Length: 136
Image (cartoon, rainbow, N blue to C red; front, side):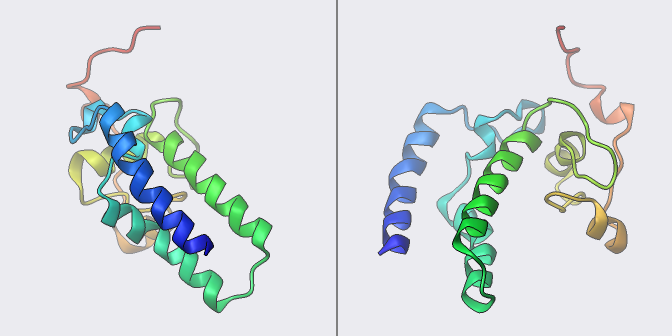
């Protein structure tokens, strides 16, 4: 019943979010709205690992809710330009390069596996040269 409710809520909410947001395919236009401006299949596939793990490993329900909320907040953070985080965390500066080049920085919260598998790209000033200066 809960899965059905969540699925229905997703199909109702996604068109609304897409209708009121600026859908951005450009890396230099990332904002909090673009964090959730994806196809329903993409969002479902990103949430599927958490759901599958809870079917195999016994996890307390409050932990599942906490992880879903933490994932939502983290997704908003990495699509904004708030401030970079120290290594090993995957901050918004690293995630920007993921959107710009589409072949680097696949990690979600850390740079660990990108470092291990050679897909890490560290931010450099030249990566941001085409962007207008931020107004303070």
